[in-house]
Length: 131
Image (tube, rainbow, N blue to C red; front, side):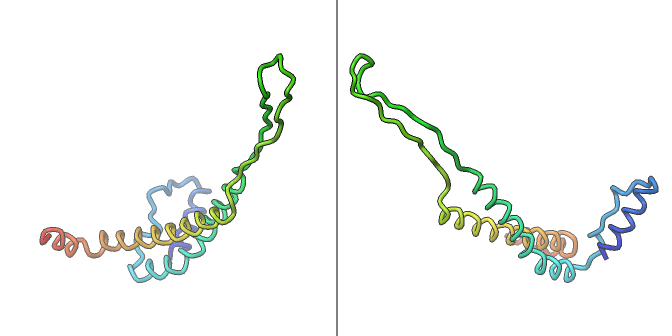
């Protein structure tokens, strides 16, 4: 299991053994990979969506302005104010929802394509040849 391999990697790294070539996911069968990603993808997408929402909430600001009415020698006054800007919450929610769905789909496609590459390469090659 990958968690056991990661635990062994941590121990080996503390002992000074190189572990960068260890593949924790290499020996998983495709069904286990698919089950894992089906369970993990919604949670990963939720956390990524929360991070994006926090980032988008931080895109707001304000700057003051002063617009004179007429040339400087006229005494018509000025228009003073503060211009504020931010992403509306409805737009932000749409962006975050689309982002979460995209992350879930992307993770599932990565696993699906990896399964094709690792376990069904000959079939995939046959499909491509017949096109």
